[in-house]
Length: 502
Length: 111
Image (cartoon, rainbow over all chains, first blue to last red; front, top):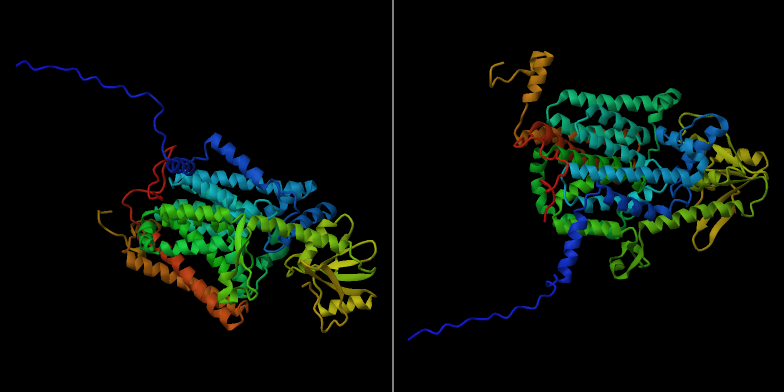
């Protein structure tokens, strides 16, 4: 029997487009690509720079900042050009920031805020170079988070020294990674000229150098930092002696500290989320000693974060004091959190710019039922916008108020804002002799006087009130509630009444 | 210097002192104790200074601020002690990647 052969004809498949991956896979792949982006490369850097500038644009023209200290810096600048004298905006002094602000103060807050923004942008690229150099992943996500963390976002749009100090600190760290120790020290000294606390980073940075037993390098780093800082602070040292090391030293109640830490630094929702993620990462804490021993840079980042936390515990006045820790904390968290937790943390932190939560309970957070009344509210960037508008509105309302002639009004926190906003229409003058113990001479012991002899001051003592009264002035203080707006109250008994705004 | 010879720190000769410092390597526990102890001293000194200058006055402020400073400085000392006195040099400077395109993330967060 002859086997019958047969030919098998296969039916060709229609040639069509390959099956596309599921939408979820595509999203995941896209996100992975985004998170791995290298922002030190030019195309990515240009896109990030555009996003950075666009995101800040609407905040640049809203005064010098929500913090009265920003307005004090501007007053220092104007005073220099008008009187030829330099006074620090407040002790311990921020000489390089005050110098740069003085140089560009003619351009008003738009110029000074824009300068801060550009320096902060430089800081973002330095941070991108650091994560790339240290091969920390996901570098794109970390860089984006650093660029859009609300606390840093707000600080990059005001005439304050935080971002100047931070950018130079990061510059010093990058030079340290490149083993250029002397230059790293000099740049760290410059950072201290912007914000004195920056000099403390010499400690964590030295860990990296001493770990490698490079004592010569350690001496160069320390010498460069201390020498530069001493040179930068020489003018203040010359005028104040060692008194310039004095600063506002008092402790707010712990409730206010908790608010600064939990609400104003990050927003309540991101702070709570980060707390939960930290709890979930507790088992990985046992790995930390090994990482510290193996990796000098991780040790330095951890020590830097802890050190700034200690500085905050020592003086928990403003959430801005935590800013120098932000990039280092981010690098520590990148190691500590597993990838899904890290992504969640970064997304929630950035989301905190626009969205937060609060309780609508009439008893506030004291009641356990507060959780039942959780409501959404504006995030930190939107809150900052509103605050800055409100600060300037109070100054405007004070100017247009029905305050009689020959009156003195104690404005408290709003005084630097008012004195700077109306510096063309008031005369700023010292009301007592210069005293090196005064923290901010141009605002604490001056008065802004208009043509109707209306006098605006920060605060008065009982004796000073009596003196104004003796000279025929009526004394007022102010109150501001968002519902009723500005109210001025005449104060009649110097011994009984307070002389600061509510 | 013969191999394996650890120079004495008490010779007061700069070169010998440097050589001793370079060779210094403790076990993790003593390193952590030395560092942590030094950190606690710094924290205690800070708390005492704050008390002396009346920056902290109310009792609850004393305890919370002092405890916070002690814990944080103790941790800083711990980190410094482990880093400087008990480094693990199984690979040199592991965090620094000198290549232009550093990918892979050694020791970094991975999925």
